[in-house]
Image 1 (spheres, rainbow, N blue to C red):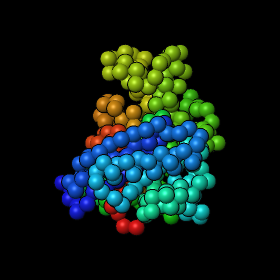
Image 2 (cartoon, rainbow, N blue to C red):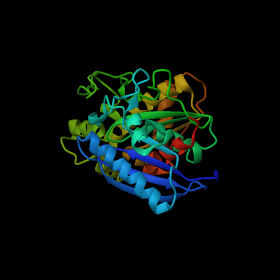
Image 3 (tube, helix red, strand yellow):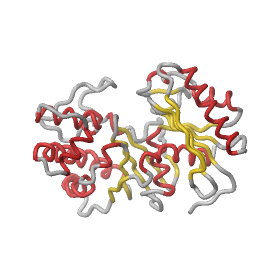
Amino acid sequence: MLERDDWLLGVDLGGTKIEIAALDGQGQFALRRRVATPQGDYAGTLAAIHSLVLSAEAELGRAGLPLGVGIPGSLSPLTGRVRNANSTVLNGQALGDDLQALLGRPVRLTNDANCLALSEATDGAGAGADVVFAAILGTGVGAGLAVHGRVLAGRNGVAGEWGHNPLPHADAQELAPRCWCGRDGCLEQFLSGPGLLADHRRHAGQGADAGAIVAAAEAEEPVARASLARYADRLARALAQIINVLDPDVIVLGGGMSNARALYTLVPELWRPHVFSDIVRTELRPARHGDSSGVRGAAWLGAGPA
């Protein structure tokens, strides 16, 4: 277990909830709290984070702890402001500067998928691996990249923006509605939970939610099994491109769709024909820390070099 001299704070800023957690010197949770995200209210979001940090430190009897924040977007290297956030109230805001002014300390921000990658590369499913690609398959689709235990954001700050690339080798039947980003055929429209649901409804004419489809597939219901098989094939094609470009040691899956256990058997078999190699040793694993990885990664982010 990793050890440090002090504790760390992490904040996971999501579209519906804001979570704070403290990690102790052994990387274990010392505190976790969450509140609802003020909808459409940037000032209210700042105030909520400020209140969470101060109350957490008061409870812990510590002040000025290192702080990392995971956000549903990225920071522009041109302006330092938030961009590409599906929580659109954040876009164009100087969130890092505003939090630093409120809290009186350095605050490190990165994309929430980068937090997943950092968490899992530090002490999770990718611990000890040189290159970890971590994909979030949830309401949306994103990914982060950790190399030698550190987030790789990229020259333009978009490393891992995998969900807004097109589905590889799409056929005439694989049509998806235009993505919220304005592009057609984005992976997010196929590999998110809503993407699975939409595909299932196109074939079955019904379906309650992605979790119910996965459960029905695991119960051997034929139509649901066929829907999950299509999903696995698309995921395999998409991840094969990542292997061809990055050749990671480990690919970690997070988000609601990562709970579909069949994917970890199906996808590595299905990606083989699409990988430009005679052997594929990349491992596909579920996130060890599950839905805790985002806030854990934010805390580890705060421990890193400025």
